[in-house]
Image 1 (cartoon, rainbow, N blue to C red):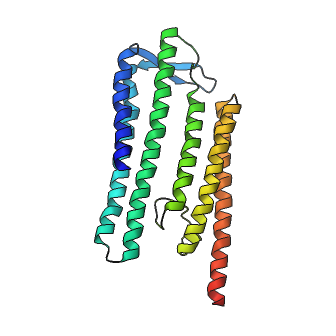
Image 2 (image 1 turned 180 degrees about the vertical axis):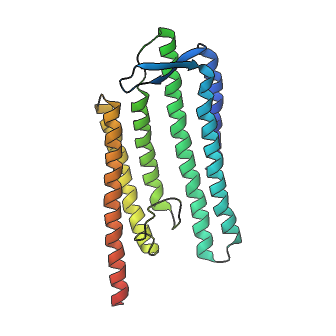
Image 3 (image 1 turned 30 degrees about the vertical axis):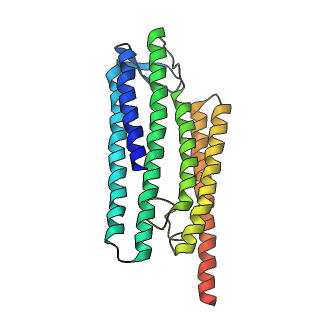
Length: 233
């Protein structure tokens, strides 16, 4: 997955370099809450986002490498398996985020092109809504990854109740994964139905908060059941 993450990141950079050749020198770069253009800037400013994406890809690679080295050094079979699993999961997370940023960049460039050639005073492509939809897709992606994780301090439901033992971790992250998939699906549906990107963003935050709260509650329930079972045993 690291190779896919880096491939997507370089596609974003190369695609941006090619796209800006077709943009006017000055393009709309910033909008207010009502979608009005508040600043025009150089088309070359579009290179900042791909560079940030590459820096993030490097950070994810370093994190994944940490677990890979841990797996090689570990003499315990369980610890080795957990480290390998976590390295793989981090690659999936990095690839998902790179894909989300690449989609967003594509729509940003499209909006700038249409806005520049028409001399628009308002936002032509609703980047806010595209961002919310992309975040919904990322929630679905992460929701599918969470059940695959082994106990770690970087990815998954990381609270004391879920990290009590392997059983609480597995059950909590499986439940949390489903909750985040549901939150992502609801985010995408409501983003398409609503006209306001701000309203869609607020609902996204609400869905994620609800998904987190019910997951924490479930983790506590599983934790109490495990503690009770250990006391009876």
